[in-house]
Image 1: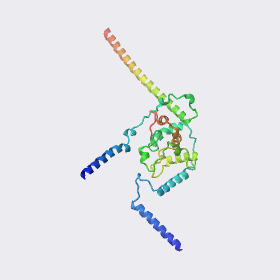
Image 2: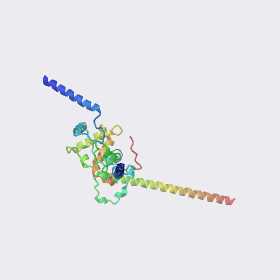
Image 3: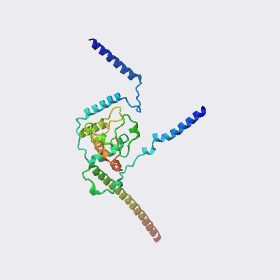
Image 4: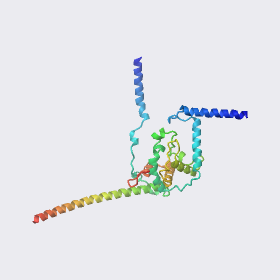
Length: 184
Length: 106
């Protein structure tokens, strides 16, 4: 009984301490100051586990399709490339300034498979993240303004993105005069 | 003392002027890019070496065929317009000649 009292007391002190710190405004909230290692671990683990759980039952359609690439290319260029880069660019204002830094999707490392090497799981995660976004990361939810077919086209395009040359990227992402401009 | 401060300030200004371009970038990077597929860049590709099952190449070829077709249509329309203008000019000339002839016959 005595131990329970001590535990409750310590718990109360911890809650008051964390609450007091949050309310004090002393935390470095600027995007140009990184989180501490402990805060980074908590937030990254929260994000990765939440996305994995939410995306695991999504059914992935065939993505090796030229029409999907033609549809997804211009959308990627207009909606994603300013943060997630394109062939020939290693950084942009947004890739440098955002925190956490948006992943470079021209890199195989961030596109081909998830952390466990699962290719289908990577496509599921990409679809879910494009559709729903991620809180407090700068990643918007495109789902409210874009249907699933259009989002899968973007997933198909970004799966090919790491192997595209600058010339191939320009051709696939150019929205020709006859094609309708991006609309929400 | 004030002379030393002035020298330090001038030195700091020079360092800042040299450092600034490293922190900023060319405003042209924000300019909109071409919206026309630049298919001339792949015009010299050896078709026999292209993997016809590769969706990337299929997409590029389809996109460039569409772009070329659009260009041809634009050229045809332009030629039609020019032809039409020439035709109108001929008709005007013909009308003027006819009027002149009619006028001369009076």
